[in-house]
Image (cartoon, rainbow, N blue to C red; front, side, top):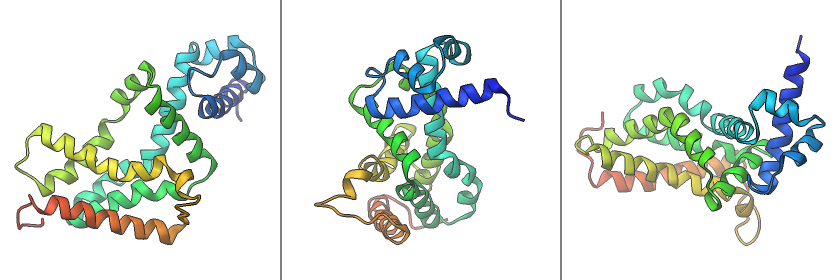
Length: 211
């Protein structure tokens, strides 16, 4: 049986997620969250220790929701050829394009952060991004095994960026003049295209062995 305190916490999280997506961190007040969640401020302080703690939990939930599937398949990637692993990584990165309301809210929150970055976001990313970045770095290393740590990190960031540009702009890309129909077949086509472009870049510096 779900405890009343858990119901309250979940209600606060859902209300805060919607408001942070609509207004960003700075534009969202505790008063607005209290009103939307139908709770008192003491409940927010009790469950999250204030606005920063609540925002951190919303960010953490959004980020984990986006990378959970990718991280859970990490061992599978190691068993694939480097080309197969790259394509699978990119495909899973683009898969949320087919999601709807919840993913859109997550991306709007991250888009707010790209314009008005907060210390809470930077701290959360430092804590949460290591497993995901490790996957991307491992894939890059298979193409450029002689690269130093700095080069590998920059290449991993670049690889992720090839997908995130589509994720960040999903709603815009579905509208004119772009008009991308973000269904399963389109996402698969896009994954294959991005994979070929990335392979073309990595291939210039990769050794002949394709282990």
